[in-house]
Length: 86
Image 1: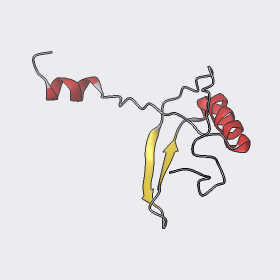
Image 2: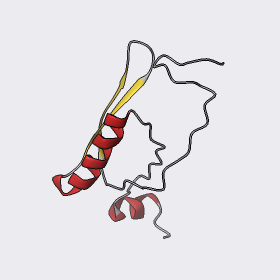
Image 3: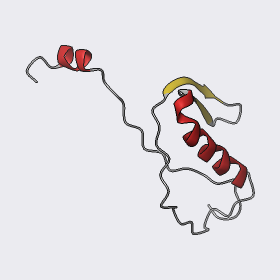
């Protein structure tokens, strides 16, 4: 598809990724399906992550998008239960 998306952004535009990384530990509070079929993910994280929250707010205000890579944290006890060999 060519032309602007629903928010007026050009789908064929070239974007560059920032070198800045926003790191924090969070729990998934909610995953919802929106009326238009999109998804909304709500994260909860501790107040010690105020710098990450500030960075996320700056991204939002600038109208920028994020590339997100999520890594699940498995408690050691659960890991041993799943795989008693390791």
